[in-house]
Image 1 (spheres, rainbow, N blue to C red):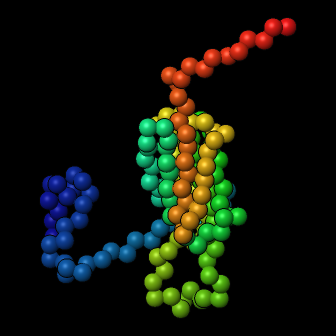
Image 2 (cartoon, rainbow, N blue to C red):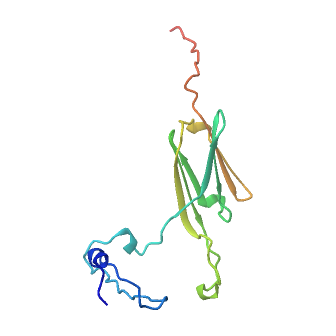
Image 3 (cartoon, rainbow, N blue to C red):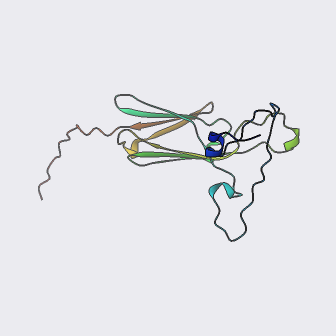
Length: 155
């Protein structure tokens, strides 16, 4: 069958005359050793991204994330005035063979999330709590309009 002008121009293949379940097997050549690899070629497990909710009140920025199944010792929260990074590790249950799973949709392994904050925060007054698998981080906003009187000492 002759290709149409559009098929010749774009290199596409017409499926006319082929069964609906037509599949084409394409072999992908693996890069040889010594060649640079892409991020997809690494054997390291990918790091998961933690889902979060971020909202604010008049004086706080609040971040919430579900961390069910993660021990508090396996969680880490680091804060700068403009950014929060949450890291952790969820251990997979031991003793279950991969072939015994019917579904395996839960994320197990290392995860992290970095959140750019919409306002600067006081890093010394951050409060982080975990209850029933919900991590809540309360970050007090810096009040730039606040004026503080300083007592002058005579020396």
